[in-house]
Image (cartoon, rainbow, N blue to C red):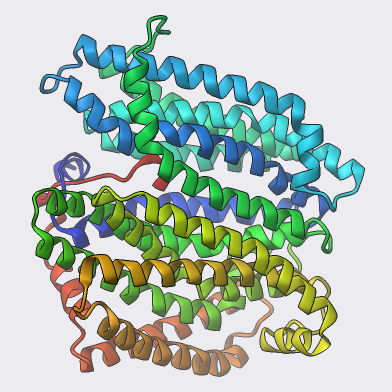
Length: 559
């Protein structure tokens, strides 16, 4: 137990060790998120009602990103620590926190009230293809969920104090309770209140997320009070630093709103299919890409600010190689084992076999951009470490705009060019089911994301690496190993399918699990023969003792 407590209270200095621990903490939350989606699939299933539920998230999420992220943990901590004396919360620090609390709470509440009354007009931008009765449900659910950005934003603010005082174990409980509360809403409130019960579960989850951080910060000495003599100079400095990152996140959110709007014109259940597959592909992204990007950021900042450019380059290359090392094999496994993954995680109750095939095909399309999404998170932080926020912002804008254009373009050619439709349906084995046009939206998202990576990759190499070899060797080694992983897994499926069958949960799980394990072993052998550096580093990391190193926990929005 003593060693476990040390894990949560110390700081990591090794990026691999930090990323693995961060991935482990994130894994628990992601597992609960998978259970959440399984319960949604079981009790509700893809359809008009669930489409309305997912569409209702878009405006509250945009409010949270556009306002709450202006007072993000990564921005506030330097301000707070500069005003503190060691471990003591000084009057200056309390005044600063009260100012931020006052401005944030008033702003968020004011915007939420305005949006509450504007929802009948905003729904035409979110779900223009819905029938009026379903648009009414979106309005109702969105109005309920408008409490969520206020509570989550306050939790984000109080979480800053929790991190300053290194209460990392308590800090990491918030996303766990958030998902548990949503599951409670699905299992117990949905049967009573219908789809509104799921919205109540979201609010309960946001409240629990906030309550844990509020209690922790209270015992750390921060008791929030409304401030009537606000130092707007400090508030202005916080906003200026946060604004580029907030705008970048807002562009992504607006692109997702556009995708949901396109999907609202498609077959009922299309939005649900998109969200199920998006959530599934987010699991490896959060565990691998985001964890490495977050773990690398403090080291990149320290190296760049101290003028150790070679050290900065080495850390950036090392983290990028690790993201590639993990992401490409997962991409191939997700493509090959997509039906088994979806059926095991979501396949029960109201979730039909046709739903499984559509979500599986959508997951395969999303999977091609998993590596790109992870590297984007890292490369953007490389620019943030150097104080350059404009370039990632501009590239993100181009990417988000391209996602919207590609969505329109691919839907058009899918509808008007039968050869293209036949090719896509044959490729993903979904020829005989309705609603396959939804696959164009993950395709647009993935292509726009890959363009984002291409631009960032070009400028990172130009601005930081010049003529140095960057990550091509790691990429091609991992690509070669991933090809063997996918091939062996595919052969395994064909061998084990007749043995275990495809009609039971256990049979589908065993054929997918054993095939995946055999593929991974094949990949490890190939990487060993290639004398892959990342594999050697991984073996070295597992030989160390985690409880003897210090810990850094990611910002709240990354958990």
